[in-house]
Length: 297
Image 1 (cartoon, rainbow, N blue to C red):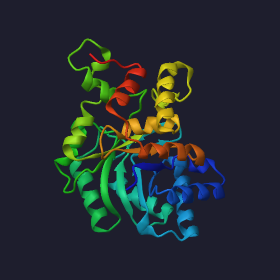
Image 2: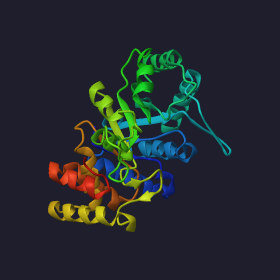
Image 3: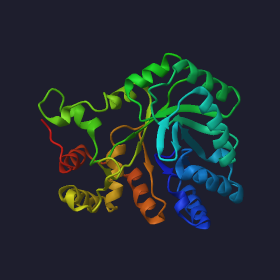
Image 4: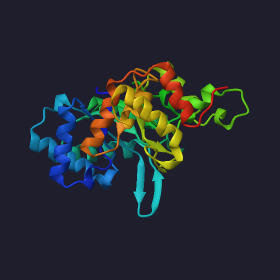
C-alpha cells in the first residue's frame, strides 16, 4: 500500500470528469489506496468513485479501497451506531455505491459508548466469511476501546485512523512531557501511539496540515509564523514544498504510518506526495516540533 492515502471526503466537490481525472492521476503517481466513509457527501463520494472504477476499467486488484461507517446523520442530529446489524447493512450499501465487489479494509468510524464487542465480532466474522471485507480496523479509538474489541474479535484490528499534525500533536507531547507540570504532558490520547506500535496496528493520519479540530490549515497561516519559517528552511534544503515536509514529519514517526490526503487539487496532492520520498534527520524533526510551539523538558 502507498504511504499516502487519497482521501475521498471532498471528491463530490469537483465536476465528475475532474474527479475522474484526479483519481486516475493519483493512481498513475503510485497512490493505490483510497479512503471513503458512508457519510462523505451522503454517499455520493462513493458513487462517484464507483463510476470511475467502471468507466476506467480499473483492475480491482491494483487498488486498495477502504470505507467506514458508524456516524449517523439524521437531519441536524448526529449519533453513533456500531451495532452488528448496522455494520452489515452499511457495508452492503457501501459496496453497492462503490460497485467494487469487496472492501480491502473496513473501519468503524468512531467509538460508540453502546458498542458490544461480541455483536461487532459476529458482524465482522460474517462479512469476512462472505468475502465482503478482507481486513478490519477502527478510527479515533483509544487503547482501552481497541482492547475491548479484541476480547471478542477473531481477527486482528489492523488500522486506527487518528488526527495528527505538526500543529496538533498531543499524542507526541504527552509522551515527551510525561511527569512535568506542562499541560502538554496531559494524556489526551491515552498512549495510543505507543499502543499501536506495540500491537502492530498501522496508524492512518487524518488532517495532516490542520491545527485544532477542523480549525484550519497551518501552512502559511499567520499564527504559525515560526513553524512556517522552519518548514520553508527545511523545504529549501530538500527542494520540496512545505506541505511535503509536514507529511515527511509524520511518516518519520513510524515506518508503518500512512497519511490521509484530503485534497482533490492535483498540484497540492503532488506536493504532499513529495513527502513520502523525504527522510528527515532527527535534528530536523525536533526543530520542526519545537517551531510548532512544543517544548522539550
